[in-house]
Amino acid sequence: MQTENENKVVSIFDRPKKAEKPTAKTKEDESYDFETIMKKNAENSGRQQKERSKANRGVIRSYRLKH
Image (tube, rainbow, N blue to C red; front, side, top):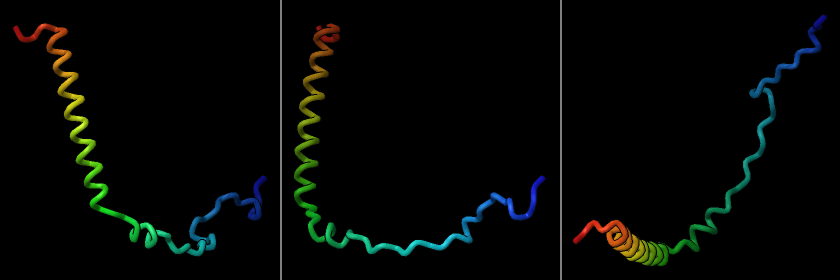
C-alpha cells in the first residue's frame, strides 16, 4: 500500500538554489598573454611540419614509391 506521505518523486524546482560563487576568471584574464601563446603555436606547428615531412620521406623510401 502506498500512502500520500511516501511520494519519492523530488522536484528539481522545489530545491533551494545554491548561491553563485564569484569566478576567478578576472585573475586569469589579467595574466593571459596572447603573444606567448602565438609563439608556442608557431613553434608547435613548425615542429609538426618537420616531423610529418620526415615521416613521409621514410614511408616513401620504405615502400619505394619514387624511383
